[in-house]
Length: 345
Picture 1 (cartoon, rainbow, N blue to C red):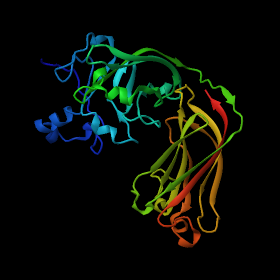
Picture 2 (tube, one colour; picture 1 turned 180 degrees about the vertical axis):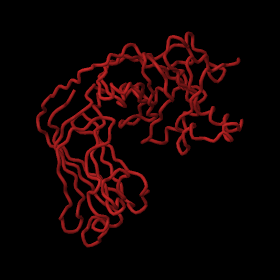
Picture 3 (cartoon, helix red, strand yellow; picture 1 turned 90 degrees about the vertical axis):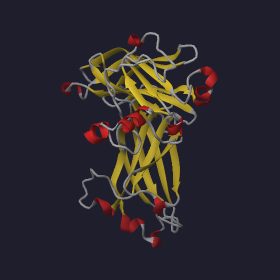
Picture 4 (tube, rainbow, N blue to C red; picture 1 turned 90 degrees about the horizontal axis):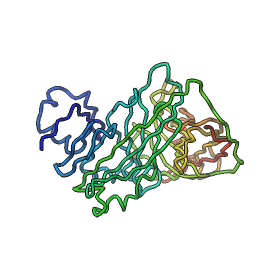
Protein backbone atom coordinates (compact mmCIF):
# COMPACT_ATOMS: atom_id res chain seq x y z
CA UNK A 1 0.00 0.00 0.00
CA UNK A 2 1.39 3.36 -0.98
CA UNK A 3 1.05 6.08 1.65
CA UNK A 4 1.10 9.70 0.49
CA UNK A 5 1.90 12.21 3.19
CA UNK A 6 1.34 15.90 2.68
CA UNK A 7 3.96 16.71 5.23
CA UNK A 8 6.35 14.75 7.39
CA UNK A 9 7.82 16.44 10.46
CA UNK A 10 10.74 14.84 12.25
CA UNK A 11 11.27 16.16 15.72
CA UNK A 12 13.57 15.41 18.61
CA UNK A 13 15.43 12.12 18.48
CA UNK A 14 17.55 12.05 21.60
CA UNK A 15 21.13 13.02 20.87
CA UNK A 16 20.36 14.40 17.40
CA UNK A 17 19.64 18.00 16.27
CA UNK A 18 16.31 19.18 14.89
CA UNK A 19 15.69 18.21 11.27
CA UNK A 20 15.56 21.89 10.33
CA UNK A 21 19.23 22.08 11.18
CA UNK A 22 20.26 19.08 9.12
CA UNK A 23 22.25 19.80 6.01
CA UNK A 24 20.75 19.13 2.59
CA UNK A 25 23.51 16.61 2.02
CA UNK A 26 22.20 14.37 4.81
CA UNK A 27 18.56 14.92 3.96
CA UNK A 28 19.29 13.58 0.47
CA UNK A 29 20.76 10.44 1.93
CA UNK A 30 18.10 7.74 1.53
CA UNK A 31 19.49 5.47 4.22
CA UNK A 32 19.51 8.31 6.72
CA UNK A 33 15.90 9.25 5.98
CA UNK A 34 14.75 5.67 6.34
CA UNK A 35 16.45 5.27 9.73
CA UNK A 36 14.49 8.27 10.99
CA UNK A 37 11.22 7.00 9.57
CA UNK A 38 11.59 3.76 11.50
CA UNK A 39 11.36 5.72 14.74
CA UNK A 40 8.68 8.35 14.16
CA UNK A 41 5.93 9.19 11.69
CA UNK A 42 3.92 12.40 11.85
CA UNK A 43 1.05 13.16 9.54
CA UNK A 44 -2.45 14.43 9.09
CA UNK A 45 -4.28 12.58 7.80
CA UNK A 46 -2.49 9.22 8.09
CA UNK A 47 -3.96 6.22 6.32
CA UNK A 48 -2.02 3.54 8.18
CA UNK A 49 1.39 2.43 9.37
CA UNK A 50 3.66 -0.56 9.10
CA UNK A 51 1.26 -1.80 6.38
CA UNK A 52 -0.70 -3.44 9.20
CA UNK A 53 -3.10 -0.91 10.64
CA UNK A 54 -5.52 1.46 8.96
CA UNK A 55 -7.45 4.25 10.63
CA UNK A 56 -11.08 4.01 9.61
CA UNK A 57 -11.63 7.75 9.27
CA UNK A 58 -8.38 9.74 9.61
CA UNK A 59 -10.23 13.00 8.91
CA UNK A 60 -11.96 12.60 12.30
CA UNK A 61 -8.68 13.55 14.01
CA UNK A 62 -6.61 16.72 13.99
CA UNK A 63 -3.36 14.82 14.28
CA UNK A 64 -2.17 11.20 14.27
CA UNK A 65 1.18 10.31 15.77
CA UNK A 66 2.90 6.98 15.12
CA UNK A 67 5.82 5.87 17.28
CA UNK A 68 7.92 2.94 16.14
CA UNK A 69 10.56 1.14 18.23
CA UNK A 70 8.69 2.31 21.33
CA UNK A 71 10.86 0.19 23.65
CA UNK A 72 13.88 2.39 22.88
CA UNK A 73 12.34 5.23 24.87
CA UNK A 74 10.97 3.45 27.94
CA UNK A 75 14.40 3.05 29.51
CA UNK A 76 14.72 6.81 29.85
CA UNK A 77 12.49 7.18 32.90
CA UNK A 78 13.09 10.93 33.16
CA UNK A 79 12.52 11.64 29.49
CA UNK A 80 9.65 12.73 27.34
CA UNK A 81 9.04 12.89 23.60
CA UNK A 82 7.35 15.69 21.68
CA UNK A 83 5.63 15.41 18.33
CA UNK A 84 6.01 17.85 15.49
CA UNK A 85 3.68 20.86 15.34
CA UNK A 86 0.20 20.58 13.93
CA UNK A 87 -2.55 23.14 13.42
CA UNK A 88 -6.10 23.07 14.70
CA UNK A 89 -8.70 25.76 15.39
CA UNK A 90 -6.25 28.43 14.25
CA UNK A 91 -3.50 27.50 16.74
CA UNK A 92 -0.39 25.31 16.70
CA UNK A 93 -0.01 22.34 19.04
CA UNK A 94 2.20 19.41 19.95
CA UNK A 95 1.58 16.09 21.63
CA UNK A 96 3.84 15.27 24.58
CA UNK A 97 4.45 11.67 25.63
CA UNK A 98 6.08 10.39 28.81
CA UNK A 99 6.76 6.75 27.77
CA UNK A 100 7.27 5.60 31.35
CA UNK A 101 5.01 8.06 33.13
CA UNK A 102 5.27 11.64 34.32
CA UNK A 103 6.52 11.47 37.92
CA UNK A 104 4.56 8.27 38.63
CA UNK A 105 6.31 5.43 36.80
CA UNK A 106 4.46 2.54 35.19
CA UNK A 107 2.03 4.75 33.28
CA UNK A 108 1.72 6.13 29.78
CA UNK A 109 1.31 9.89 30.25
CA UNK A 110 -0.04 11.87 27.30
CA UNK A 111 -0.45 15.62 27.07
CA UNK A 112 -1.38 18.38 24.67
CA UNK A 113 0.79 21.49 24.47
CA UNK A 114 -0.27 24.84 23.01
CA UNK A 115 2.93 26.02 21.33
CA UNK A 116 2.11 28.97 19.03
CA UNK A 117 -0.44 31.78 19.45
CA UNK A 118 -0.83 35.29 18.07
CA UNK A 119 1.53 37.84 19.62
CA UNK A 120 -1.34 39.76 21.29
CA UNK A 121 -2.43 36.53 23.04
CA UNK A 122 0.92 35.58 24.55
CA UNK A 123 -0.25 36.22 28.11
CA UNK A 124 -3.83 35.11 27.54
CA UNK A 125 -5.53 32.21 29.26
CA UNK A 126 -7.33 29.66 27.08
CA UNK A 127 -10.16 27.27 27.84
CA UNK A 128 -9.42 24.11 25.84
CA UNK A 129 -11.69 21.11 25.30
CA UNK A 130 -9.99 18.12 23.68
CA UNK A 131 -9.92 14.36 23.27
CA UNK A 132 -6.79 12.17 23.23
CA UNK A 133 -6.73 8.71 21.62
CA UNK A 134 -4.71 5.51 21.77
CA UNK A 135 -5.43 3.13 18.90
CA UNK A 136 -6.20 -0.58 19.29
CA UNK A 137 -4.59 -2.30 16.32
CA UNK A 138 -6.53 -5.52 16.92
CA UNK A 139 -10.05 -4.15 16.81
CA UNK A 140 -9.42 -0.84 14.98
CA UNK A 141 -11.02 0.84 17.99
CA UNK A 142 -9.57 3.42 20.36
CA UNK A 143 -9.04 4.13 24.02
CA UNK A 144 -9.99 7.78 24.43
CA UNK A 145 -10.16 10.35 27.21
CA UNK A 146 -11.78 13.79 27.10
CA UNK A 147 -10.49 16.77 29.01
CA UNK A 148 -11.18 20.45 29.55
CA UNK A 149 -8.51 22.69 31.04
CA UNK A 150 -7.48 26.28 31.41
CA UNK A 151 -4.00 26.79 30.03
CA UNK A 152 -1.49 29.28 28.75
CA UNK A 153 1.22 29.02 26.15
CA UNK A 154 3.49 25.96 26.69
CA UNK A 155 1.31 24.44 29.41
CA UNK A 156 0.90 20.66 29.20
CA UNK A 157 -2.70 19.54 29.60
CA UNK A 158 -3.87 15.97 29.44
CA UNK A 159 -3.59 12.76 31.41
CA UNK A 160 -0.86 11.55 33.72
CA UNK A 161 -2.41 8.08 33.50
CA UNK A 162 -3.58 7.68 29.93
CA UNK A 163 -3.13 3.93 30.39
CA UNK A 164 -1.23 1.57 32.68
CA UNK A 165 2.10 0.64 31.09
CA UNK A 166 1.60 -3.07 31.77
CA UNK A 167 -1.79 -3.01 30.04
CA UNK A 168 -0.29 -0.98 27.19
CA UNK A 169 2.47 -3.55 26.63
CA UNK A 170 0.09 -6.54 26.63
CA UNK A 171 -0.18 -7.38 22.92
CA UNK A 172 -3.63 -8.90 23.43
CA UNK A 173 -4.94 -5.37 24.01
CA UNK A 174 -3.61 -4.23 20.63
CA UNK A 175 -2.11 -0.92 21.75
CA UNK A 176 1.52 -1.91 21.18
CA UNK A 177 2.08 -4.19 18.21
CA UNK A 178 5.45 -4.94 16.62
CA UNK A 179 6.85 -2.34 19.03
CA UNK A 180 4.71 0.35 17.33
CA UNK A 181 1.79 2.41 18.56
CA UNK A 182 -0.39 5.28 17.42
CA UNK A 183 -1.86 8.24 19.29
CA UNK A 184 -4.40 10.78 18.08
CA UNK A 185 -5.91 14.08 19.15
CA UNK A 186 -9.02 16.08 18.41
CA UNK A 187 -9.28 19.71 19.53
CA UNK A 188 -12.96 20.19 20.31
CA UNK A 189 -12.87 23.86 21.28
CA UNK A 190 -10.45 26.58 22.31
CA UNK A 191 -11.67 29.88 23.71
CA UNK A 192 -9.18 32.68 24.49
CA UNK A 193 -10.01 34.64 27.62
CA UNK A 194 -8.91 38.13 26.64
CA UNK A 195 -9.18 39.42 30.19
CA UNK A 196 -6.69 37.54 32.37
CA UNK A 197 -8.39 35.84 35.29
CA UNK A 198 -6.96 34.38 38.46
CA UNK A 199 -8.55 32.79 41.51
CA UNK A 200 -6.65 32.23 44.75
CA UNK A 201 -7.49 29.23 46.96
CA UNK A 202 -5.71 29.59 50.34
CA UNK A 203 -4.43 26.32 51.79
CA UNK A 204 -3.80 25.10 55.30
CA UNK A 205 -0.11 25.59 56.02
CA UNK A 206 1.31 22.08 56.20
CA UNK A 207 5.07 21.74 56.34
CA UNK A 208 6.63 19.53 53.66
CA UNK A 209 10.23 18.39 53.58
CA UNK A 210 12.23 16.43 51.03
CA UNK A 211 15.86 15.33 51.18
CA UNK A 212 17.94 14.47 48.11
CA UNK A 213 21.32 12.79 48.54
CA UNK A 214 23.41 13.06 45.40
CA UNK A 215 26.17 10.46 45.24
CA UNK A 216 29.16 10.41 42.86
CA UNK A 217 28.71 14.15 42.57
CA UNK A 218 32.01 14.73 40.78
CA UNK A 219 30.86 12.48 37.93
CA UNK A 220 27.77 14.57 37.09
CA UNK A 221 27.75 16.33 33.74
CA UNK A 222 28.53 19.98 34.52
CA UNK A 223 26.98 21.21 31.27
CA UNK A 224 23.40 20.32 32.17
CA UNK A 225 21.06 20.63 35.15
CA UNK A 226 20.12 17.58 37.20
CA UNK A 227 16.65 17.12 38.63
CA UNK A 228 15.05 15.06 41.39
CA UNK A 229 11.27 14.68 41.30
CA UNK A 230 9.00 13.96 44.28
CA UNK A 231 5.40 14.25 45.46
CA UNK A 232 4.08 16.20 48.45
CA UNK A 233 0.63 17.48 49.41
CA UNK A 234 -1.03 15.98 46.35
CA UNK A 235 1.29 17.91 44.02
CA UNK A 236 4.38 17.12 41.96
CA UNK A 237 7.66 18.91 42.60
CA UNK A 238 11.30 18.75 41.70
CA UNK A 239 14.62 20.22 42.79
CA UNK A 240 17.11 21.09 40.08
CA UNK A 241 20.83 21.66 40.52
CA UNK A 242 23.46 22.84 38.09
CA UNK A 243 27.11 22.77 39.04
CA UNK A 244 28.24 25.68 36.94
CA UNK A 245 25.27 27.99 36.86
CA UNK A 246 22.72 28.71 34.16
CA UNK A 247 23.37 30.31 30.81
CA UNK A 248 20.92 33.13 31.59
CA UNK A 249 22.38 34.00 34.95
CA UNK A 250 23.12 37.66 35.66
CA UNK A 251 26.36 36.71 37.35
CA UNK A 252 29.28 37.62 35.12
CA UNK A 253 31.34 34.52 35.87
CA UNK A 254 28.60 31.88 35.99
CA UNK A 255 31.08 29.02 36.22
CA UNK A 256 32.01 30.15 39.74
CA UNK A 257 28.58 29.34 41.21
CA UNK A 258 26.29 26.39 41.86
CA UNK A 259 22.61 26.96 40.95
CA UNK A 260 19.67 25.54 42.88
CA UNK A 261 15.94 25.82 42.06
CA UNK A 262 12.51 24.54 43.14
CA UNK A 263 10.01 23.49 40.46
CA UNK A 264 6.25 22.83 40.43
CA UNK A 265 5.00 20.11 38.04
CA UNK A 266 1.25 20.11 38.62
CA UNK A 267 -1.28 18.07 40.60
CA UNK A 268 -1.06 14.29 40.79
CA UNK A 269 -4.76 14.27 39.87
CA UNK A 270 -4.25 16.12 36.57
CA UNK A 271 -6.34 19.02 37.81
CA UNK A 272 -6.26 22.37 36.05
CA UNK A 273 -4.14 24.14 38.68
CA UNK A 274 -1.28 25.71 36.76
CA UNK A 275 0.16 27.96 39.48
CA UNK A 276 0.88 27.54 43.15
CA UNK A 277 2.03 29.99 45.82
CA UNK A 278 4.63 28.65 48.25
CA UNK A 279 6.98 29.73 50.99
CA UNK A 280 10.10 27.60 50.76
CA UNK A 281 13.74 27.12 51.63
CA UNK A 282 16.53 25.18 49.95
CA UNK A 283 19.52 24.00 51.92
CA UNK A 284 22.85 22.34 51.23
CA UNK A 285 23.67 20.27 54.29
CA UNK A 286 26.96 20.64 56.16
CA UNK A 287 27.64 16.98 56.92
CA UNK A 288 30.43 17.74 59.40
CA UNK A 289 29.52 20.68 61.63
CA UNK A 290 25.84 21.15 60.85
CA UNK A 291 26.30 24.72 59.58
CA UNK A 292 24.03 24.37 56.57
CA UNK A 293 23.84 26.80 53.66
CA UNK A 294 20.16 27.83 53.56
CA UNK A 295 18.19 30.33 51.48
CA UNK A 296 14.49 31.17 51.87
CA UNK A 297 11.93 32.80 49.57
CA UNK A 298 8.26 33.02 48.63
CA UNK A 299 7.17 32.56 45.03
CA UNK A 300 4.31 31.73 42.69
CA UNK A 301 5.45 28.74 40.66
CA UNK A 302 3.89 27.96 37.31
CA UNK A 303 3.68 24.49 35.86
CA UNK A 304 5.78 23.97 32.70
CA UNK A 305 7.94 27.03 33.41
CA UNK A 306 11.40 27.16 34.98
CA UNK A 307 11.31 27.06 38.75
CA UNK A 308 12.24 29.66 41.33
CA UNK A 309 15.52 29.72 43.15
CA UNK A 310 19.05 30.99 42.94
CA UNK A 311 21.38 31.02 39.95
CA UNK A 312 24.21 31.81 42.36
CA UNK A 313 23.23 29.76 45.42
CA UNK A 314 26.81 29.19 46.59
CA UNK A 315 30.28 29.68 45.12
CA UNK A 316 31.93 26.52 43.89
CA UNK A 317 34.95 27.40 46.00
CA UNK A 318 32.85 27.25 49.17
CA UNK A 319 30.87 24.24 48.00
CA UNK A 320 33.99 22.17 47.31
CA UNK A 321 35.83 23.24 50.46
CA UNK A 322 36.24 19.95 52.37
CA UNK A 323 36.38 21.76 55.72
CA UNK A 324 32.83 23.13 55.21
CA UNK A 325 31.33 19.66 54.83
CA UNK A 326 29.04 20.25 51.86
CA UNK A 327 30.66 17.42 49.89
CA UNK A 328 31.67 14.33 51.86
CA UNK A 329 32.74 11.07 50.22
CA UNK A 330 31.76 12.63 46.89
CA UNK A 331 28.15 13.10 47.98
CA UNK A 332 26.05 16.10 48.95
CA UNK A 333 22.59 16.46 50.48
CA UNK A 334 19.97 18.96 49.31
CA UNK A 335 16.91 19.60 51.48
CA UNK A 336 13.71 21.40 50.41
CA UNK A 337 11.27 22.64 53.09
CA UNK A 338 8.09 24.44 52.10
CA UNK A 339 4.52 25.47 52.87
CA UNK A 340 1.83 25.64 50.17
CA UNK A 341 0.17 29.01 50.75
CA UNK A 342 -2.45 28.88 47.98
CA UNK A 343 -3.51 27.26 44.75
CA UNK A 344 -3.85 29.68 41.84
CA UNK A 345 -6.34 28.92 39.07
